[in-house]
Length: 94
Image (cartoon, rainbow, N blue to C red):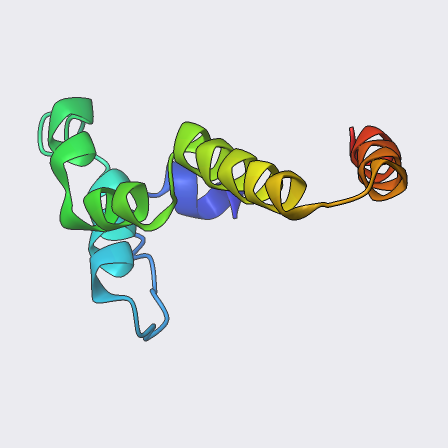
């Protein structure tokens, strides 16, 4: 591996992977010449990173959904004992 870093004529072999955008990111990040290498600004705009950012939900949205579900469940409870049980179960989750 050290030989690959030292030898400028060494070509990096990339496996054939299904995520073509990921392969493009890897290839562009591993360009030897820093002037030809992808910049951080370009990297942040790359489609692969844009897809990853959109794929994961915001933590606040997840928290809001969970909170709404919990409040809806609590509103449906009828007896004081069921409310106490639900409160104890929620306390255990935290």
